[in-house]
Image 1 (cartoon, rainbow, N blue to C red):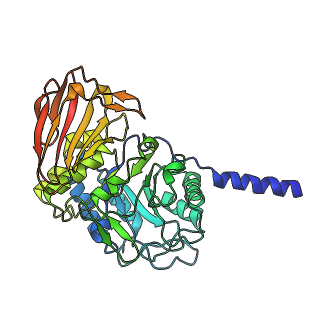
Image 2: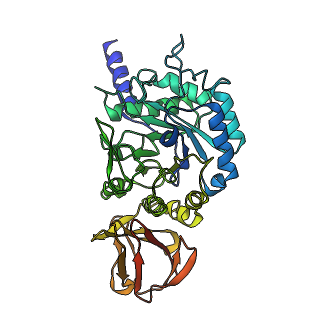
Image 3: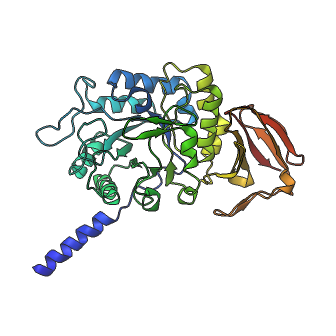
Length: 401
């Protein structure tokens, strides 16, 4: 009997210590819309249904934004008598399944939020101790994507907590993407690949270009501060396991140049593209950025390689990203407050991806296709000279041949 108990405890430890996520759900970085950046907990079924409508009407669904993710604040403040999570009856009077069915009927996929702690970040019921029960409910509700946060987790081991939830989702038997939102505190890139399809690498983003936003006890980060923290992480990313530098702030208050740069950087980094604006009210310029098929194609390139910062001098950065069929993407980014001139000699400047072993053929010929103007602008046979406006980019797809 004693040996049997020891064996059972050992088996339980192994099951907790290892995870096997649903494979093949995110061959390219997930794309969609999330409620948090604009609405926080001020959400309801009418608004979510309207967002589903707009994702279709605006062409965002056709551009690839197929996950509608309901973030924190969707549940009642207490579980029911059986310990189940209950949708807030005022916010969701027809229940959550009715909203999920509506979103699915639009040809979209539905995502939702909870937290590895005892409470969510907004103090709603967390999942700690209810992992398998909650996973069964998510499966019953036909959920396609779970964002799993890291608030109120004192004394909890991150790898154990996320592995347990991953196992619970697998046990429930309904395939869904598992988004590890642990903020990079416990280096999820080192253990997250068998656990989830993506993992947050930093604290939350804020709608500023190059500074921080204080929340008192912690700082939200800007677009550029987040990109600064990605340099050493690209080796961990690839199909079905992505670094996540957080959601998009395009359309939430930055300038058009800053929005364009933000979107370009996220594409170069093969980041998940989760819009966070009120798409019911977005301007034509914001829509043009978010639905730019040429930039999205760089983010969604099937090769699945995260780009890298090639150089960074005098506020002018150059990023490269290998693409399928021998193509490359290049982004000249001006971080500074004044216009900058750039000169790049393709034939005399070696560009090598030492991690994924790709080399730009600097003796060959590439066409420079500007992904923002949608025009060819010469070839790599000539030195590239241009001016880049403050907080803006010039971005090309280098087409082989």
